[in-house]
Image (cartoon, rainbow, N blue to C red; front, side, top):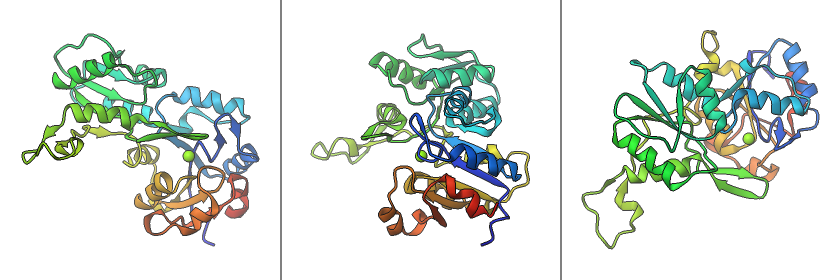
Length: 288
Ligand SMILES: [Mg+2]
């Protein structure tokens, strides 16, 4: 198999490197071997609740060594994007948790966690997952948008998968703002379902997957063709479809949310180019 042409391997984190607080058996050893063989590696996540520093610590606790530069999150990507805006915003309002706040502070912003007084002027509202979301926070976020703030969403994931099901994701919080800022359709009939009568207001920018901005940041300054990137993930919808759509090589591992039967049935954009039981088998597969 023509595997040597990969110059960059990007790993989704939960379900690939670890599950919650438990490392995938053999992950640390496999990563070391891959790194020592000259592959550039990156870890990527849409989860904006933890900063790259926190994720580095989280992995270290599980015996997995990594550098901050190898970690890419939608919180970091959002901060990077806001930094690139011209003119630079004077205020950055945050509907999110400490990890997102830390990334914004590290990027040099005086970030204000909502609820906070909202001024007029050049501002950005950043939305991520906030597990302590309140009506007051949503009201402040809405006021920021009403005052003309640009809206940057870390991601629009509807759900946050946990061990036994799902929790509402960052997108479900963003959706309440999108609905509040939405436009009632002209043909709205009182007998129609109410949700479908409103055209949602989209954020101005989405930093996380399925937007490939994080991949662009990983490849920034390097001459890498998309085909030379191997993307390793555990979800057919979020990872494999994303990798295929962004023209990377996709590899599914069965150590996360996708079972073998489901994986075999995958078609079209969700069909992985390759499949392994876990990351532990990757060095063999790469022929190293
Ligand atoms: Mg995953």
